[in-house]
Amino acid sequence: YAPLAEIDPEVKNIIDKETWRQFTGLELIASENLTSVATMEANGSILTNKYSEGLPAARYYGGNEYIDELEVLCRKRALQAFNLDPAKWGVNVQPYSGSTANFAALTALIQPQDRLMGLGLPDGGHLTHGYYTAKKKMTASSMYFQSFPYSITPDTNLIDYPGLAAQAKIYRPKLIICGASAYPRDWEYATLKKTAQDVGAFLMADIAHTSGLVAAGTLNNPFDHCDVVTTTTHKTLRGPRAGLIFFRLDHPEAKDLEKRVNDAVFPACQGGPHNNTIAAIATALLQVSQPSFKVYAKQVIANARTLGEELVKHGYKLQTNGTDNHLVLWDLRPLGLTGSKVEKVCDLMGITINKNAVSGDASAQVPGGIRLGTSAITSRNMLEEDVKVVAGFLHRAVQLSLLLQKEAGSKMLKDFVRVATTQAEGKEGFAQV
Ligand code: PLP
Image (cartoon, rainbow, N blue to C red):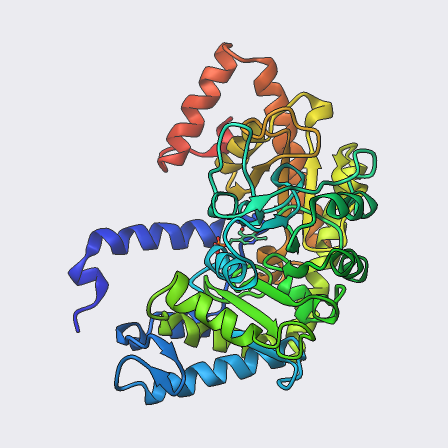
């Protein structure tokens, strides 16, 4: 019963430092959020002790009466959160993460070496949507399936729907995946459904990034058109780190989707569910269903729009010239700066962002942009006026990055690195630079 500080002061100290970092910094990573204390309490609970391979009322271990109750409750809340009819949709709440949810969904929907199409990674897609490079197939989704990426239109940077339809007619995929990690616009699910139907493919939406906004009804609804919908639970949904797979129970040609998805999660891809996480998902979903979450989701979008508008006012270029959702893709190439440089400078300023490829980047290793998201700062109750201040900080970070680039090798830069490094160690103030 001894507390962590007594048993393991080293780990406690690291947690304390990270807590301080999260509390004192500005979190602008689009895939992150700040989950509630209640959700964290459920996540850190005694439920971590229990094994429960299988499904409610069909487990491989005894002692699961409360775990069954929990998983049934979590499923019910997941369907409620997305306003889904339990007669038409089912959900598996066991995936450990978005990546495992996606691989399980692929396993359920298609056979090894079948063809799939997902948005290319350099255009904003995710690794698990079939990504590979000319040199290597480094993701399971490209190793075990044949994959052909679709893309965005070069001039608008919007999804090339006609191009995808034409390519799908030639490539004849068994599965089309929509959804992305770095795409600031909404998706045309009805158009995608037609494309998938025309070639006899399943349509799967991975709404990992936008699921909170979808649940709040602030974006187009993928459930109206897709056969399977996957999501992480820790981004705009504001839950613990995990994944969900929703599947149609009334699919005209695949009545067995429920069994296929459940079998794909366990035993095909995973072992025992993480019951502490399932409890935390349930708590987060309860919060998603409350009216205050709709207010939150609307504010996330309003904040992202304001952030984009302010950066444009400062003279910067955004991919797609704006945003429909929680993220802003900032193209730094007109300034001759790389995303990595700005990311490092922001780190030193206590602003957390990530470098990101922007369309047409010559190298994914040295991306020419950064991705910003407003989910976490909105969880800290920031409004448009606050976001304008944040945009001002980012402007200063970019100006500083430009100056440092210009002064590379100079005494000024050496001084900067010295002061910034000692500041990072907590010995000196950043204001001295
Ligand atoms: N799908 C999308 C669209 C994502 O952006 C991500 C992660 O960023 C994932 C899946 C994978 O989620 P996880 O990191 O939980 O495996």
